[in-house]
Length: 468
Image (cartoon, rainbow, N blue to C red; front, side):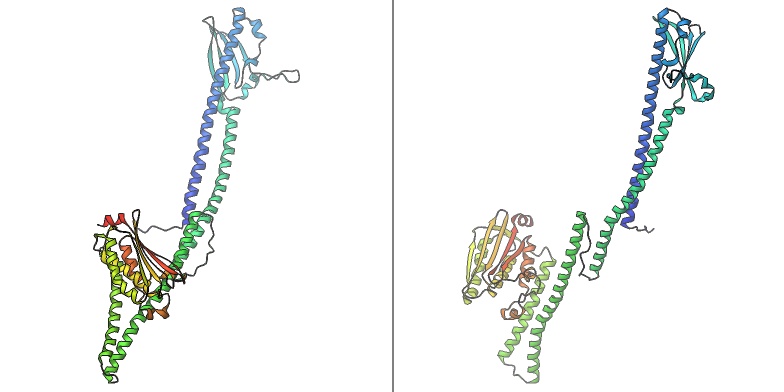
């Protein structure tokens, strides 16, 4: 069964509206029920207190004379009764009726309103409740009093609660409508930029990298996502340009020696040239150059694709670098460039020393290639905390800010016009970077055009120990 997909905006609307409706219904209903219970509890307690007060009042009347005095009782009206008690009937201890008191209004305009018992006939019996209390004096029973009370459900209290609940539910319905409108705006505000980002990512996947930046939002996370997608598009565009340039450079590197070899062989075959030793040596040199290019490409591919191609061993890196530098001294002397050493002694690390020497050799060859006569190249090695730092610094032509981010790309050259004269194939730095990253380290560069460059290798000792 295929699940039906829904949009983010629809999902947010359904979720938030569901939450709003649940909260708006549960909370008001709970408040209404709690208020009903509390109000009814209050009325019941108040009624109990009023009945007790009226009982004490009647007992006090009896205690004045020591018996039920008709003359005294006839002067008493129902003013001692409190709502919702509308009537109180007193009986002696034998059950004989003594007097009935009715709740009366207060005086109005010098006249007293009619007692409520005159309208009692208008009240349905189901709307009245009866409660009975014993009357006592000095611990002995002197009679009883029966209270007639209007029930809570038919009194003004219940009417008040009904009006309150009606207003509450109308307010809740209004708030639900407002909340749904706010939720819709919020969902639109969140989903629209995300939808735009999704469309932008789709365009990037189709090769359209030149995208505008019109997506606006004040949500931090979405803004970070927008910037990430924008940067991804720029990076992919840059990589696409590098790929195109890479293919052009590879074709150029392969075409040149192949063309030379082909022209020589055709000349030999057609009898234009005599196959002299000198011309054969030139042909072999081009074949060797082609083989070296293929070998370095294979080396780089192996370094980048495999994590287990390092032969690690515990090595005195200081001593090994001193030995390998002896091989480069003649090359630097022939060009009149001074190779300086700043090597901290007895730095021991777990490395593939052959690969490290290859990486350092590529950096030294690169420095020598672009450093003019009577200048210097400095190799330094030191241990900083748990990091080995090895650097090659030259005072050569430097690298422009435009070329600096791309110099570790395969076949990338900062100056194509000088590349063949300098003898580089544009792959040495890529190999060095792959070797160092295989050791868990980093290779970085700092350069100023016309001043010189500094390549820095950093290899964590902790990672070395784990690899060993």
